[in-house]
Image 1: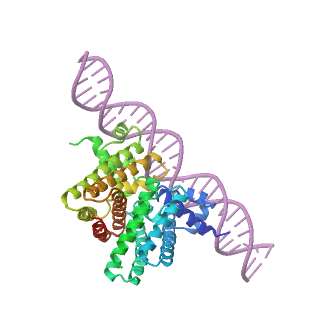
Image 2: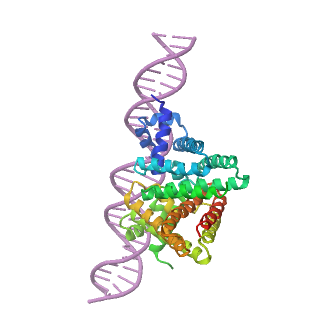
Image 3: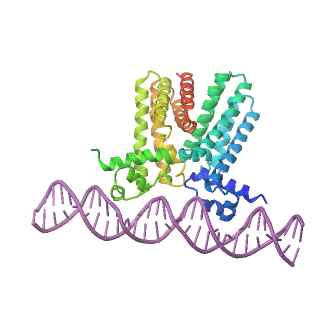
Length: 187
Length: 187
DNA sequence: CCTCCACTAAAACGAACGTTCTATTCGGTG
DNA sequence: CACCGAATAGAACGTTCGTTTTAGTGGAGG
């Protein structure tokens, strides 16, 4: 069986992407992860915040890999972003539109906490870096690539959010199509 | 002086856009609004949820007016969205990047509550309707307009979020520029 | 065999939550 | 003046929160 610590982090990420940071209790995380409160505080002496930071880092890696996979599987960044949006739509539909992006869900509640805000910021920055690099290798100039990366991540996050609220993939499909079109005007 | 009820709703919206739904306590809302707990429960017998629904409706109207103003002040929808993004960036910078969109902040925490999710969904739909109508009057076809409206709202929401987290207007400026470019390929 | 340490387990704490309750104030109407 | 409902005020309730504390387990090393 996979380690207890990993199970706790994974469960925390899953719950936080459904109900945010404040809405997710430590006791619930422990119960859902088949761990005890003692185990949680053993692995995360810093308490809820340390666990949340680990969950954010975990999710950062996870979505980063989806981005890389999408980019590796298509010939142009535009097509890659379209397939990425489709993957997100499928993922959301699979579990009834409740499992979204934990970074987004957490970010808005914790803007007052500098550590948390910084961790979420790093996640977004990491993802933008992946997109920007792919755009540069596709021939887009340095400045344009960095700027486009901002919009790519923003529209994916925004579309995921509105798709969740509407319980419909429309927003993500539109986002994918328009990203492909927009990026197409640069390469 | 403006009415107590209105002051409570406005304060609730302001606090919810900073710390979300779960993170904002009813007692804090009362204190910040210079009202008492008794007054809050007098005007909102349904408790926190009824107040939150009123706050969402309030914010829906507020951002809707910003959209209409932007569209009325520019000749093309693309330019309007660019100026709208700029307005959002100025608004965010004004108070230290903490006052974002309460609908976005609330939506992700309350996906499990059908009333709340529906209220947030209505807000997004309302805003999309405004954008779609402007696009149609600018000559964009019915289907394209509806689809573009999805992306316009998604990218504005996403860019506002990432701008808040990064404490920088970059994401919103990029969003405005790219929206203008994207919409420019349709009209 | 004993000890140490990583880990599990659960009880208990104070604080804060949303809510309910009782009292009081106040302006208008009989 | 008496009275009533709207509105204000805040104490108090039960619950849940994050955290701390204490106790117990099981396996590896001297």
